Image 1 (cartoon, helix red, strand yellow):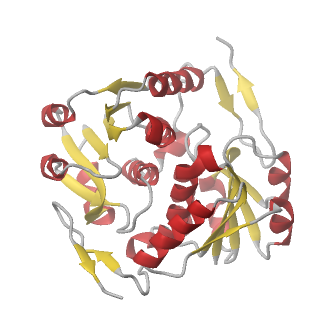
Image 2 (cartoon, chains in turn red, orange):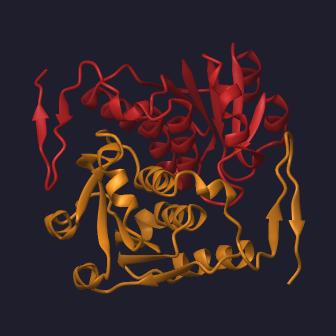
Image 3 (tube, rainbow over the protein chains, first blue to last red):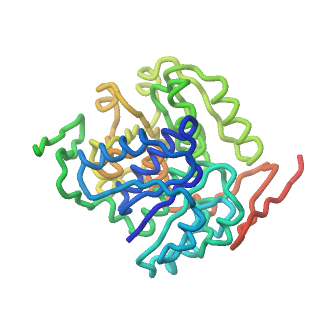
Length: 172
Length: 172
């Protein structure tokens, strides 16, 4: 099972980035996203609403003390950072682990995160986006399985089209 | 050459998402990002500042009329949308094209975008993030080449570490 921890959420500044992180976590196969920083009921509601409509059992939970949460996590911890070892050098090793916590920061990640993580890995050594880093990490970890993933109890589902949109209403 | 068009930028709401799209475009190997919607000098400056510091010739340019821009683009156009054909079914065909424009929307994409694009492709059929969709698309298009990409004239560069950060100052 794959879990994601989004560190240091700030309600005003990170609203959309944290929502995107959570939705990427869900779409690419994680079970649940945890977040620390400022508690944000709107973020939680928005993610739950999407998960409810599009199916699957994805959850979101606030973590008051990220440090004790990471220390107590029963599995390997992978911190995504542009300063870490390139993912291709570590992905085979990481894939052997079945319970992982993927930690995504943003600006000003405390140095303890680097120490508490089993792997610090980079998705390129360039500045870009925690949303992108998480997506590419999960894409590689699951080897593209997200393209075939089914979501149980979905109320709607997309039928792929060459042009335009087709959405099936699956009812309640 | 790969170009990216980010549609319908709104200064207040999309500031960080559009910045992340631009930085992902750069880090994952695109030449330049174009954007339509509201002109945003701060977005342009922020992207140029990062490109200048971290190297490479990446550019950003505002497009007043996205429709005539797309129509006049001398190459194939790929629109990333959760309603399109799954990327794995199209990527081999798309990789044959050397000049492409990758179009990323957001909410409320005009229906003309679907018609003007040569391919409408989905990065999963789930709602998540244009930042993530762009990253996974470029990762697949370039087959992971972003991990080995070098940026010319960089003023700083990261030396990957198992723990912590190491940044080389390359001077002016």
